Length: 179
Image 1 (cartoon, rainbow, N blue to C red):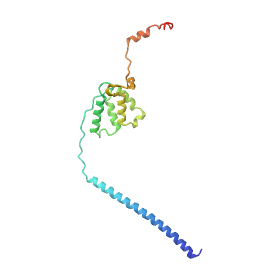
Image 2: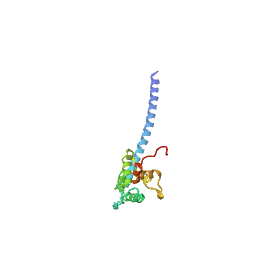
Image 3: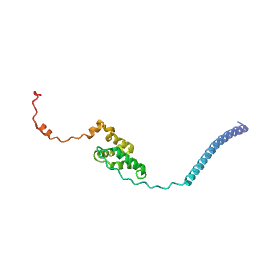
Image 4: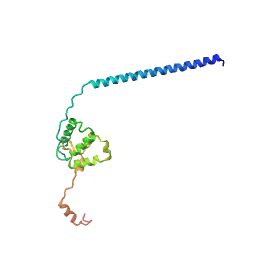
């Protein structure tokens, strides 16, 4: 290759390289402009937010806690409704699902408290939301129109002492041929 041909090929390669760099520079310039616009927009939003007056802080009302519920007497819906109002009117006092479940646990007694203690101590309870916990409580203890499902009936089943059982167990068994 002669020197002029070499210079021509070098010049062509240099021109191609400059064209690629111009394209790259153009796309980078567009990205920089986009970022500048984003920064200006966010600064404007922040300034607007800082200028808008905040509403005065309203103290949360002080509400009495509802009566304890044992899971059998009365209505669990009354307790749950009262707690939902407390959570609505005092959101900063009970901000998390765990704090709401804790308050609910303090308002349970009897078999409902026993059930809740077992449920909350299970490993899967760490990710349990308040609404999921309440739903499980309702399934177990709150039944519409007095209708209970079989699982709840078995859960609440209690054996009462019967003095006749002692007499029956103490009797001798009849021979098999009589039966």
